[in-house]
Amino acid sequence: MKILKKDQIEEALNRMADQAEVYVPLQKGTQTGFYTWQSYDNTTDTLVLDELNVSLPPKQVVFPQTDKMYSFKQNGVEIDIDKIYEAIEPQVVFGIRACDLQGIACLDLVFLTKGYEDNFYKARRENLTTVAQACYQPGQACFCSSMGVDPVHPEADVIISDLGEEGYAWEAQTEKGQALTEKIAELLEEKEVKLPELQEFTLKVEYDGVAEKLKEMFEHPIWEQLSEPCQTCGICTYLCPTCHCFDIQVKTWGDEGYRFRCYDSCMYEEYTREAGGGNPRGKVSERFRNRFLHKLEFFQERYGTPLCTGCGRCIIACPTGISIIKLIEKVKEADTGA
Image (cartoon, rainbow, N blue to C red; front, side, top):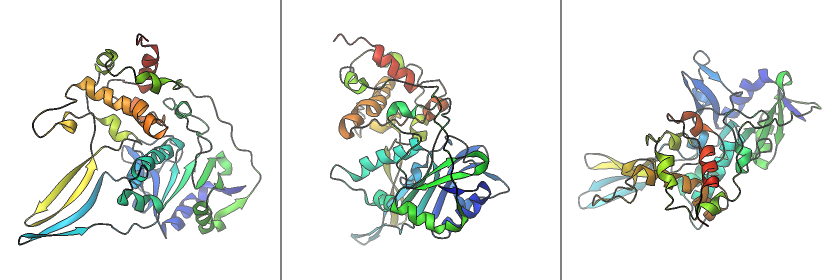
Protein backbone atom coordinates (compact mmCIF):
# COMPACT_ATOMS: atom_id res chain seq x y z
CA MET A 1 0.00 0.00 0.00
CA LYS A 2 1.19 3.54 -0.69
CA ILE A 3 2.11 5.65 2.33
CA LEU A 4 2.41 9.42 2.58
CA LYS A 5 4.57 10.45 5.54
CA LYS A 6 3.14 13.21 7.69
CA ASP A 7 6.23 15.36 7.27
CA GLN A 8 5.56 15.26 3.51
CA ILE A 9 1.97 16.53 3.71
CA GLU A 10 2.83 20.17 3.09
CA GLU A 11 5.08 19.30 0.16
CA ALA A 12 2.33 17.11 -1.31
CA LEU A 13 -0.18 19.97 -0.98
CA ASN A 14 2.29 22.38 -2.57
CA ARG A 15 2.67 20.08 -5.58
CA MET A 16 -1.10 19.71 -5.95
CA ALA A 17 -1.49 23.48 -5.66
CA ASP A 18 0.85 24.02 -8.62
CA GLN A 19 -1.92 22.92 -10.97
CA ALA A 20 -5.13 23.20 -8.93
CA GLU A 21 -6.93 25.19 -6.29
CA VAL A 22 -6.57 23.01 -3.19
CA TYR A 23 -8.97 23.19 -0.25
CA VAL A 24 -7.86 21.82 3.12
CA PRO A 25 -9.24 21.89 6.68
CA LEU A 26 -7.64 24.88 8.39
CA GLN A 27 -8.09 26.73 11.63
CA LYS A 28 -8.00 30.47 11.02
CA GLY A 29 -8.30 32.31 14.31
CA THR A 30 -11.19 30.68 16.17
CA GLN A 31 -12.87 29.42 12.98
CA THR A 32 -12.29 26.05 11.34
CA GLY A 33 -13.33 25.24 7.79
CA PHE A 34 -12.11 24.35 4.32
CA TYR A 35 -9.91 27.11 2.94
CA THR A 36 -7.50 27.20 0.04
CA TRP A 37 -4.03 25.90 0.72
CA GLN A 38 -2.81 28.91 -1.22
CA SER A 39 -4.21 31.11 1.60
CA TYR A 40 -2.37 29.16 4.32
CA ASP A 41 -0.16 31.27 6.60
CA ASN A 42 2.03 29.10 8.82
CA THR A 43 2.36 31.91 11.36
CA THR A 44 -1.36 32.18 12.08
CA ASP A 45 -3.14 29.16 10.54
CA THR A 46 -3.17 25.49 11.53
CA LEU A 47 -3.75 22.48 9.29
CA VAL A 48 -6.33 20.39 11.18
CA LEU A 49 -6.51 17.07 9.34
CA ASP A 50 -7.08 15.32 12.68
CA GLU A 51 -10.26 17.30 13.43
CA LEU A 52 -13.27 15.15 12.61
CA ASN A 53 -15.61 17.89 11.47
CA VAL A 54 -14.44 21.43 10.96
CA SER A 55 -17.16 23.99 11.62
CA LEU A 56 -17.76 24.99 8.00
CA PRO A 57 -18.42 22.16 5.53
CA PRO A 58 -16.66 22.18 2.14
CA LYS A 59 -19.86 22.55 0.10
CA GLN A 60 -18.80 26.09 -0.86
CA VAL A 61 -16.22 24.53 -3.19
CA VAL A 62 -19.02 23.45 -5.55
CA PHE A 63 -21.82 25.69 -4.24
CA PRO A 64 -20.32 29.05 -3.15
CA GLN A 65 -22.03 31.25 -0.59
CA THR A 66 -22.31 33.93 -3.29
CA ASP A 67 -22.17 33.12 -7.00
CA LYS A 68 -22.38 35.63 -9.87
CA MET A 69 -24.85 34.55 -12.55
CA TYR A 70 -24.60 37.26 -15.19
CA SER A 71 -23.79 40.94 -15.61
CA PHE A 72 -25.82 43.51 -17.50
CA LYS A 73 -25.57 47.05 -18.84
CA GLN A 74 -28.34 49.28 -20.07
CA ASN A 75 -27.68 50.72 -23.52
CA GLY A 76 -30.53 53.10 -24.29
CA VAL A 77 -33.69 51.00 -24.47
CA GLU A 78 -31.62 47.84 -24.88
CA ILE A 79 -30.01 45.79 -22.13
CA ASP A 80 -26.78 43.96 -22.90
CA ILE A 81 -26.42 40.75 -20.90
CA ASP A 82 -23.09 39.03 -20.43
CA LYS A 83 -23.32 35.53 -19.01
CA ILE A 84 -20.68 34.84 -16.42
CA TYR A 85 -19.28 31.37 -16.78
CA GLU A 86 -15.97 31.97 -15.13
CA ALA A 87 -13.25 29.54 -16.14
CA ILE A 88 -13.13 26.96 -13.37
CA GLU A 89 -9.63 25.73 -12.74
CA PRO A 90 -9.08 22.21 -11.39
CA GLN A 91 -9.93 21.94 -7.70
CA VAL A 92 -8.94 19.45 -5.01
CA VAL A 93 -10.64 18.98 -1.65
CA PHE A 94 -8.11 17.32 0.63
CA GLY A 95 -9.17 15.75 3.92
CA ILE A 96 -12.92 15.76 3.34
CA ARG A 97 -14.83 13.37 5.60
CA ALA A 98 -17.41 10.83 4.44
CA CYS A 99 -20.38 12.82 5.77
CA ASP A 100 -19.34 15.92 3.83
CA LEU A 101 -18.64 13.86 0.73
CA GLN A 102 -22.17 12.45 0.99
CA GLY A 103 -23.33 16.05 1.29
CA ILE A 104 -21.81 16.80 -2.11
CA ALA A 105 -23.44 13.65 -3.48
CA CYS A 106 -26.80 15.04 -2.32
CA LEU A 107 -26.06 18.35 -4.02
CA ASP A 108 -25.25 16.39 -7.19
CA LEU A 109 -28.77 15.00 -7.10
CA VAL A 110 -30.27 18.48 -6.77
CA PHE A 111 -28.17 20.30 -9.36
CA LEU A 112 -27.42 17.57 -11.90
CA THR A 113 -30.40 15.20 -12.11
CA LYS A 114 -34.15 15.05 -12.75
CA GLY A 115 -33.85 16.76 -16.12
CA TYR A 116 -31.96 19.81 -14.86
CA GLU A 117 -28.27 20.67 -14.88
CA ASP A 118 -26.98 23.79 -13.19
CA ASN A 119 -24.11 25.06 -15.36
CA PHE A 120 -22.33 26.82 -12.51
CA TYR A 121 -22.43 23.77 -10.26
CA LYS A 122 -21.58 21.36 -13.07
CA ALA A 123 -18.43 23.26 -14.06
CA ARG A 124 -17.08 23.12 -10.52
CA ARG A 125 -18.09 19.52 -9.91
CA GLU A 126 -16.50 18.20 -13.10
CA ASN A 127 -13.22 19.88 -12.19
CA LEU A 128 -13.17 18.57 -8.61
CA THR A 129 -10.96 15.79 -7.24
CA THR A 130 -11.79 14.53 -3.75
CA VAL A 131 -9.30 13.16 -1.24
CA ALA A 132 -11.33 11.77 1.66
CA GLN A 133 -9.96 10.92 5.07
CA ALA A 134 -11.43 7.72 6.49
CA CYS A 135 -12.96 8.04 9.97
CA TYR A 136 -12.19 5.19 12.36
CA GLN A 137 -12.96 6.99 15.63
CA PRO A 138 -16.37 8.72 15.43
CA GLY A 139 -16.88 11.95 17.33
CA GLN A 140 -19.37 12.55 20.12
CA ALA A 141 -21.93 14.09 17.73
CA CYS A 142 -21.28 11.82 14.72
CA PHE A 143 -23.99 9.44 13.52
CA CYS A 144 -23.27 9.08 9.80
CA SER A 145 -23.60 5.30 9.81
CA SER A 146 -27.21 5.65 10.99
CA MET A 147 -27.91 7.67 7.82
CA GLY A 148 -26.38 5.10 5.48
CA VAL A 149 -22.91 6.66 5.18
CA ASP A 150 -19.78 4.49 5.29
CA PRO A 151 -17.15 6.47 7.25
CA VAL A 152 -14.29 4.16 6.29
CA HIS A 153 -14.93 3.61 2.56
CA PRO A 154 -16.29 6.89 1.17
CA GLU A 155 -16.80 7.18 -2.59
CA ALA A 156 -13.86 9.53 -3.14
CA ASP A 157 -11.17 9.74 -5.80
CA VAL A 158 -8.55 9.01 -3.13
CA ILE A 159 -8.97 7.66 0.41
CA ILE A 160 -6.35 8.43 3.05
CA SER A 161 -6.23 6.68 6.42
CA ASP A 162 -4.36 8.01 9.45
CA LEU A 163 -1.85 5.38 10.61
CA GLY A 164 -0.35 7.46 13.39
CA GLU A 165 3.43 7.78 13.24
CA GLU A 166 3.57 5.73 10.04
CA GLY A 167 1.77 8.46 8.10
CA TYR A 168 -1.29 8.18 5.87
CA ALA A 169 -2.28 5.19 3.78
CA TRP A 170 -3.04 6.46 0.26
CA GLU A 171 -5.52 4.58 -1.93
CA ALA A 172 -6.49 5.93 -5.36
CA GLN A 173 -10.03 4.86 -6.29
CA THR A 174 -10.65 6.52 -9.67
CA GLU A 175 -8.87 7.87 -12.73
CA LYS A 176 -8.88 11.32 -11.16
CA GLY A 177 -7.38 9.83 -8.03
CA GLN A 178 -4.69 8.06 -10.03
CA ALA A 179 -3.82 11.28 -11.86
CA LEU A 180 -3.44 13.07 -8.52
CA THR A 181 -1.32 10.20 -7.21
CA GLU A 182 1.08 10.58 -10.12
CA LYS A 183 1.63 14.24 -9.21
CA ILE A 184 3.05 13.26 -5.81
CA ALA A 185 4.44 9.83 -6.71
CA GLU A 186 7.95 10.74 -5.52
CA LEU A 187 6.62 11.40 -2.02
CA LEU A 188 4.83 8.05 -1.65
CA GLU A 189 6.38 4.90 -0.23
CA GLU A 190 5.29 1.29 -0.63
CA LYS A 191 4.72 -0.54 2.62
CA GLU A 192 2.56 -3.30 4.04
CA VAL A 193 0.31 -1.86 6.74
CA LYS A 194 -2.81 -2.79 8.65
CA LEU A 195 -5.62 -0.26 8.55
CA PRO A 196 -7.33 0.69 11.83
CA GLU A 197 -10.69 -0.78 12.82
CA LEU A 198 -13.84 1.30 13.02
CA GLN A 199 -14.74 2.09 16.61
CA GLU A 200 -18.24 2.15 18.09
CA PHE A 201 -20.48 5.16 17.46
CA THR A 202 -21.61 7.03 20.57
CA LEU A 203 -24.72 8.33 18.78
CA LYS A 204 -27.05 6.02 16.92
CA VAL A 205 -30.58 6.31 15.62
CA GLU A 206 -32.88 3.96 13.70
CA TYR A 207 -33.92 5.86 10.58
CA ASP A 208 -35.70 2.97 8.83
CA GLY A 209 -39.42 3.68 8.51
CA VAL A 210 -39.16 7.34 9.55
CA ALA A 211 -39.82 8.77 6.08
CA GLU A 212 -42.93 6.62 5.71
CA LYS A 213 -44.26 7.61 9.13
CA LEU A 214 -43.67 11.30 8.47
CA LYS A 215 -46.06 11.13 5.52
CA GLU A 216 -48.86 10.81 8.07
CA MET A 217 -47.60 13.56 10.40
CA PHE A 218 -47.90 16.83 8.48
CA GLU A 219 -50.73 18.09 10.73
CA HIS A 220 -49.47 16.37 13.89
CA PRO A 221 -49.32 18.58 17.03
CA ILE A 222 -45.79 17.33 17.72
CA TRP A 223 -44.33 20.14 15.55
CA GLU A 224 -45.50 22.82 17.98
CA GLN A 225 -43.79 20.97 20.82
CA LEU A 226 -40.56 20.20 18.97
CA SER A 227 -40.18 23.71 17.56
CA GLU A 228 -40.76 25.54 20.84
CA PRO A 229 -37.02 26.00 21.66
CA CYS A 230 -36.13 27.10 18.09
CA GLN A 231 -34.87 30.68 17.77
CA THR A 232 -34.90 30.54 13.91
CA CYS A 233 -31.30 31.74 13.91
CA GLY A 234 -30.57 29.59 10.84
CA ILE A 235 -27.19 28.33 12.07
CA CYS A 236 -28.26 24.74 11.39
CA THR A 237 -28.84 25.53 7.72
CA TYR A 238 -25.61 27.44 7.17
CA LEU A 239 -23.44 24.75 8.76
CA CYS A 240 -25.26 21.86 7.08
CA PRO A 241 -23.33 20.11 4.26
CA THR A 242 -26.55 19.48 2.30
CA CYS A 243 -28.71 22.60 2.74
CA HIS A 244 -28.95 24.40 -0.59
CA CYS A 245 -31.63 27.07 -0.28
CA PHE A 246 -30.62 30.24 -2.09
CA ASP A 247 -31.93 33.68 -2.98
CA ILE A 248 -31.20 35.71 -6.12
CA GLN A 249 -30.16 39.32 -5.60
CA VAL A 250 -28.96 42.15 -7.81
CA LYS A 251 -26.11 44.63 -7.40
CA THR A 252 -26.28 47.80 -9.48
CA TRP A 253 -24.26 50.96 -10.02
CA GLY A 254 -25.41 53.51 -12.54
CA ASP A 255 -26.72 51.73 -15.62
CA GLU A 256 -24.95 48.44 -15.02
CA GLY A 257 -24.76 45.64 -12.48
CA TYR A 258 -24.94 41.91 -11.98
CA ARG A 259 -27.22 39.26 -10.54
CA PHE A 260 -25.95 36.72 -8.06
CA ARG A 261 -27.33 33.93 -5.97
CA CYS A 262 -26.50 33.60 -2.30
CA TYR A 263 -27.26 31.26 0.56
CA ASP A 264 -30.65 31.64 2.20
CA SER A 265 -32.42 29.70 4.93
CA CYS A 266 -35.87 28.15 5.06
CA MET A 267 -35.86 28.94 8.79
CA TYR A 268 -36.20 32.66 8.09
CA GLU A 269 -39.68 34.20 8.03
CA GLU A 270 -38.79 36.19 4.89
CA TYR A 271 -37.91 33.06 2.93
CA THR A 272 -41.52 32.28 1.98
CA ARG A 273 -42.99 35.75 2.37
CA GLU A 274 -44.91 36.68 -0.78
CA ALA A 275 -44.99 40.07 -2.51
CA GLY A 276 -48.58 40.60 -1.38
CA GLY A 277 -47.62 40.05 2.26
CA GLY A 278 -48.92 36.50 2.65
CA ASN A 279 -46.73 33.75 4.01
CA PRO A 280 -47.54 30.01 3.82
CA ARG A 281 -44.96 29.33 6.53
CA GLY A 282 -45.28 32.35 8.77
CA LYS A 283 -45.12 30.42 12.04
CA VAL A 284 -41.90 29.01 13.51
CA SER A 285 -43.48 25.58 13.83
CA GLU A 286 -44.33 25.57 10.11
CA ARG A 287 -40.77 26.43 9.09
CA PHE A 288 -39.36 23.96 11.57
CA ARG A 289 -41.64 21.23 10.21
CA ASN A 290 -40.68 22.01 6.63
CA ARG A 291 -36.96 21.79 7.38
CA PHE A 292 -37.14 18.37 8.96
CA LEU A 293 -39.69 16.97 6.53
CA HIS A 294 -37.34 18.01 3.73
CA LYS A 295 -34.40 16.32 5.47
CA LEU A 296 -36.13 13.11 6.40
CA GLU A 297 -39.12 12.63 4.07
CA PHE A 298 -39.33 14.84 0.97
CA PHE A 299 -35.75 14.30 -0.21
CA GLN A 300 -35.94 10.59 0.56
CA GLU A 301 -39.10 10.31 -1.52
CA ARG A 302 -37.66 12.23 -4.49
CA TYR A 303 -34.08 10.96 -4.56
CA GLY A 304 -34.02 7.78 -2.48
CA THR A 305 -31.70 9.04 0.26
CA PRO A 306 -32.11 11.28 3.32
CA LEU A 307 -30.83 14.85 3.21
CA CYS A 308 -29.06 14.34 6.53
CA THR A 309 -25.56 12.82 6.47
CA GLY A 310 -25.08 12.50 10.22
CA CYS A 311 -22.25 15.04 10.52
CA GLY A 312 -23.63 16.36 13.82
CA ARG A 313 -22.85 20.04 13.19
CA CYS A 314 -26.42 21.19 13.85
CA ILE A 315 -26.44 19.32 17.16
CA ILE A 316 -23.20 20.99 18.24
CA ALA A 317 -24.09 24.50 17.07
CA CYS A 318 -27.76 24.85 18.04
CA PRO A 319 -27.94 27.46 20.83
CA THR A 320 -31.00 25.79 22.39
CA GLY A 321 -29.86 22.18 22.11
CA ILE A 322 -32.23 20.95 19.38
CA SER A 323 -31.06 17.54 18.19
CA ILE A 324 -32.15 15.81 15.00
CA ILE A 325 -31.43 12.50 16.76
CA LYS A 326 -33.95 13.28 19.49
CA LEU A 327 -36.40 14.54 16.88
CA ILE A 328 -36.24 11.24 14.98
CA GLU A 329 -36.78 9.35 18.24
CA LYS A 330 -39.80 11.53 19.08
CA VAL A 331 -41.24 10.91 15.61
CA LYS A 332 -40.85 7.16 16.05
CA GLU A 333 -42.62 7.35 19.42
CA ALA A 334 -45.45 9.61 18.20
CA ASP A 335 -49.00 8.29 18.08
CA THR A 336 -50.46 8.88 14.63
CA GLY A 337 -53.67 6.99 15.32
CA ALA A 338 -52.85 4.53 12.56
